[in-house]
Length: 289
Image (cartoon, rainbow, N blue to C red):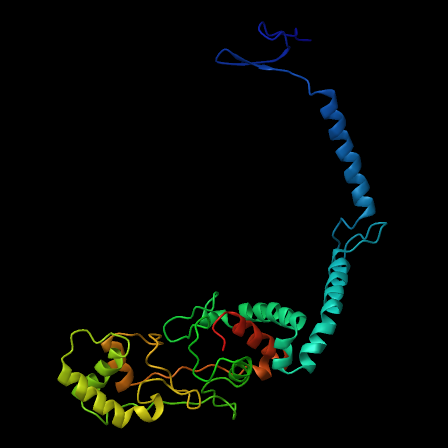
């Protein structure tokens, strides 16, 4: 048997191995650590016996306690559904004005609508409902067809320019590229930009010509002063909120060849109750009327 070698500095036995003058100490594990280690082995054996542990071909060992994470999750989901059932029934049975008037129902509908919005609406309107080019911001107070809870509900339920739904919101600005000259369209764009101070240093004659052309061709829908119309779905041109850009070039492009966004109808997809919840949530964002 090899003679045990003792380290001169620590007084601890070494393993007998040495690398470049460095020796490896053979320090024993503390007794408390060993007992903890043995305890974990015993605990693991007990766990394997008590709980599901070993996978089999089509199932797994079930354990003496018969515990199931799936059953626990199902029970928690059932409890959550039961807790929501009364509120869901109340939302389904109430019109949206009654929901808005009831603090508890409004709070529930707002939370449920926020969840539905994150799943179905953020793809176009953004996670913060801020919109982007071609997709309206839902936080501001600019509404084509009105911003009351009922107006918003109807828009969500039936969509915008969604042909499969006969009750869809519909407005369509004609293209003036084949009706007016490029110069005339530019003059209209200057006049529209001037509503919000975006006409730059355009001369007075060009602006006057643009105003006359606007009154002849655009005022019927957008109003003489560019105030827009909820009844027609015609946007206000005076609020500096633009769907496709605010520059004279952007406005010129829209007058010449207008773009028309489409939003699908959601009532058949999500159901009337979820549509109400979405309307309450969107109204709560701060821009509702």
